[in-house]
Image (cartoon, rainbow, N blue to C red; front, side, top):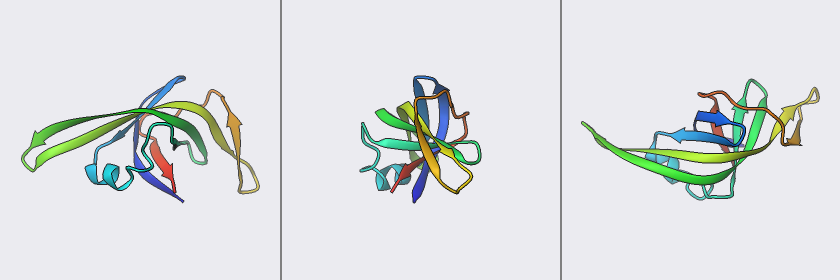
Length: 109
């Protein structure tokens, strides 16, 4: 099972940045969001990019409701999961698959 944590903000062959705009999501998944852990990022309808977390940054802004925490997670793509015709996924190391901004980032539970 996977949990959606945020969206792709930036994507290049060496870096994917996932944006989390909810402190509750970050706090409830903090153990999985550690440097070296893996994220699964949607790429179209059935494929996923697998990437390793390299660093995590945050900002705090103030609005009428109080503090608003936002997080950015920089990841290095290491491969992708390709859907086959038998309802299975095959991991392929490397590749040139890049998710577009707004695709969903997920952690595996």
